[in-house]
Image 1: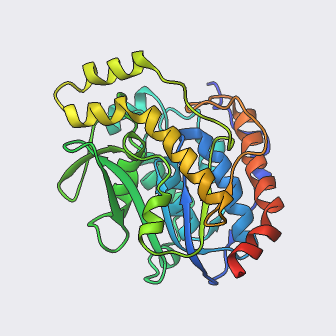
Image 2: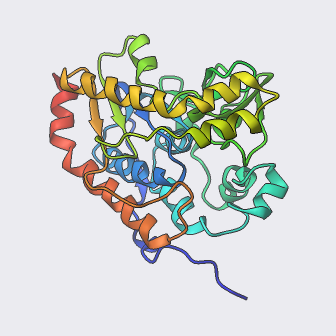
Length: 303
């Protein structure tokens, strides 16, 4: 029987439980499927430095990372992805058959939890917010599902990370939803609207990255989701919206209104990357980048 490949450094990943100390402000986590291992690295470095933000909002992989950040479990997100990315229970046809989507959420949220359980005591703290952004399939607009306010935050995280085309909608609070990235990629505007003075944004693409307009992708969205025109329109316009978000974020960064951590070097890690060593390297790029930002980030948070 062929052994499922794992990252060669899986046994040496950081481990531990973050402190109970909270920092005022909001951390915003971009999605990007398995590019989210970068965010895992950044968050592990922040947790080790006692930078545990009061509010976390994430899209797609950002919501999954946010779940483990709020539970304070250093290395847990990385252990899942760097050990099980090639496991058919997690990604692929087997996962699709049991989950109606390419990602096996019953494995990552239930079965894996038996061996490496989510710290529910820390996760359920009332003084720590977690918001998962998903896309309403009826309106094509983002929905913001908050821990303690929605019926099931883990179901909302699943919806947030359910990629279009390869996933069926997930119903949260009676709303059929898909990947939050269909309608919103980097939800810093939500944090601004909530009145947070300190906002930290973790990207999964270099700061200079912008998407090229793709007419074929727009046409595909309209064909595939012709029975859901609002969703189709949201997906078709996602590239231009993403670039506008990036431009606005850069302006806010220059003004000192937000603090941004993004990959310090370009990478070829794809959304559904299979190369476990590439994924491990990208995780450690995030971990290294997170550590290199600690002094300037603390200055930003404290001033």
